[in-house]
Length: 236
Image (cartoon, rainbow, N blue to C red; front, side, top):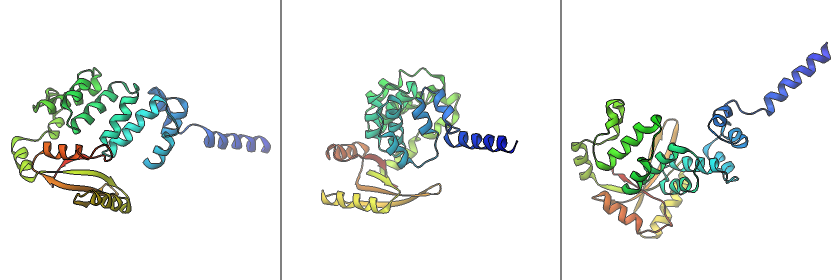
């Protein structure tokens, strides 16, 4: 009897140790492979997850790489990953649309957003299309919170007074932020860092220059070439 109990306990511990993470069932249900689902089901930092995903070139891992870069505000890199895969359905189209909106490519954004048919995502595609046409989204009648993502006329006027700047990343490591500052100085820019609190995390944003309009900021950033990944943001 005692031996039976010991064996049973060992089997339970074995199953707990080597079975799939509890959250992997969610990813399996959404079309991920068993290997990728087990990886996504683990609790780990974004840096470690990125390293693990880079070891695979499956459609779903490419999609997840795009989402990681999108979450970091690296929209050009995110867009390149979303374009390399057809995984993700309408959610992928939404990310493509949002990336293009940020990168000031309204025609490309519209091409992606108009294809979305999933009712769960349609409100956000409606918001994106409204952002492009500078109107209030039709979905705001059903989802009032969407209006929070659109500037009113008075707010736009105030922002135009402040101007825009180029952001080259937001780093958890101040040393990495300083390295980017030095690189930008070497090419003649005037960079600076700002510290922000995001929940329990501290990030160091690296920004450079000041422009009166978003268009001028976009042109200046594009002139830097593909060596730098940037986003145009309002000055604070």
